[in-house]
Length: 141
Image 1 (tube, rainbow, N blue to C red):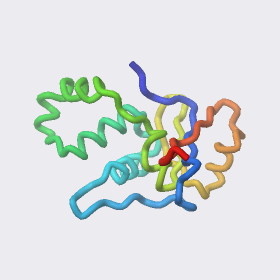
Image 2 (cartoon, rainbow, N blue to C red):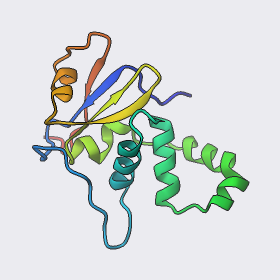
Image 3 (cartoon, rainbow, N blue to C red):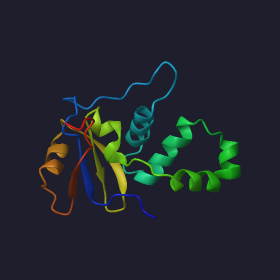
Image 4 (spheres, one colour):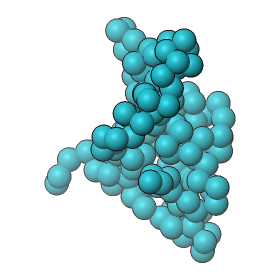
């Protein structure tokens, strides 16, 4: 099963409160999923597919030890993908923090700040080969 997007741009959600892209904060109790998503995607633009990013965030969020990954990696990955998982359209990056997400032809993603010219070009459909999808709303209104 392939959960990745290809040649797709996810805009910020229609009800996103951020006028400018902001870095998601961590909590005193530890890392948040949005901050992990941001860190990984920002450090390696076009370095992860959606599946790779979601799994890596899961591993880091659950603090799975490298030894356990080495021993049970395939089993853990299979268990993770056996359950329904929200896609990046439902991520807090486009819903709350003002980040668009571009997926290239290889399915690799990069974050695009909503205030950037690149964001506006993608969102306006200036790239005919790229499908534009809105990030999911936070509320049902």
